[in-house]
Amino acid sequence: MSKLSENDIEKKLLHLPDWEYYDDAIHAEFEFENFKDCFSAMSRIAFECEALNHHPNWTNVYNVLTISLSTHDVDGVTEKDFKLAKAIEYIVEPEDE
Image (cartoon, rainbow, N blue to C red; front, side, top):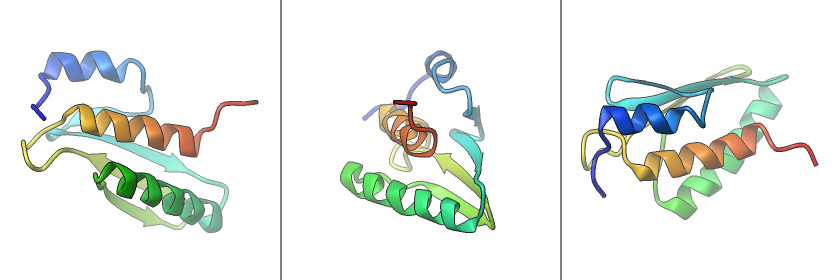
């Protein structure tokens, strides 16, 4: 998988408004109602990470989850990061049915 250009990353971020690009990674922060909801989302994200074989750098403080995605093999952002970011978005902010 090849590293995306900064221009390509910025275009892709137009579809992911919760995410920002800096320090060779894409970053987002999500706030939940409480710790239990945050941890529940983290657990669901973990299953998606395993399925994609791609794992985030993340931290959790009470009800806030901070995530950074980059592909370490290429020292930057790839399609793999955007695939995981979209999956995370679906988990933390599901579409209304």
